Amino acid sequence: MKKVICIVLCIIFVTSYVISVGAAETEIADTGKTLVTIGDWTYERISGGKYWEIDSYAGNDVDLVVPRIVNDVMVVSISDYCFNGDTSIKSVVTSSPLWNIGEYAFSGCTNLESIELNFALQTIGVGAFMGTHSLKDVNLETTVVTEIKAHTFMNSGIKVVTLPDTCEKIGNYAFGQCSSLTKITIPSSVTEIHDDAFKGTNNVVIYCYTDSYAHQYAVSKGMSYVLIDGQPVAYLLGDANGSDSIDITDATWIQRYDAEMDITPVKDTIMHGDVDGSGSPSVVDATFIMRYLVGIATPYDIGTLVTRV
Image (cartoon, rainbow, N blue to C red; front, side):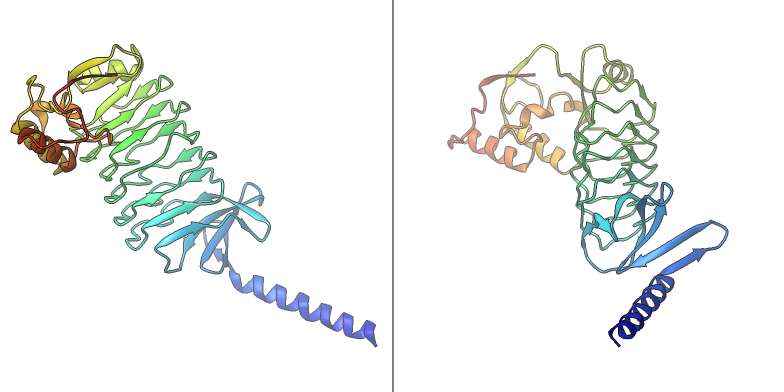
């Protein structure tokens, strides 16, 4: 009797499993793709079925946590156009060691503020973060990305970027029209930068090594640069316009910079207005300068000669 019951239960289990999987699988005509939906996520098997690639997400979470292991299979990739145009997403945590972020994967995600990129990331597709206006900080330094492809961060809100020493190329409009981008550190490993890589990005300062490709590029384009291994520069802390004195004009230029207005006449010295050492001049720095000018004590040595690389 027990044997019969066991057999019946096994049949029920196997039948229910087949129905469940069968209902979740979708054949995509003319593509050869088989998609599997598990919860709010839809996946495709890649690399001979060894791994998952995320094809789409149907949930409502604004703070996404990318799954790491699904049915004992690791998630390693986000497909092309996966989250394209999703204006509800605010943050993405990649708990899985993602190898790839596909073309235009997050393009047009205008409310995306942060994304965690991990050590395993090798490839970021064309236009992956294009138009992510709210995205301010991206940590590429810990990845092993070899190329920043065309339009990758075009028209995004990023302010500071450090490329990994695995990077070799920066493509067309990769950082184009990034009005908030003020600092990019480019390693000596980069040996190719497209002529229009920074097209329309007027306030960026390239941090690079002496005689590196990035150094030569900056010189040829007339772009502001700082040699990481160069001689230290001495200036008056707070002297944003390079006049060798501190006055209300410095505070005004900093306010213009913070408001993303044109600062072309002082773009080479605006970073000297970063009195609090935050990495970027802001209205906070302008306020401290104005306090200094009226004789109110500040925690910073505004007006004194400092030396920085």
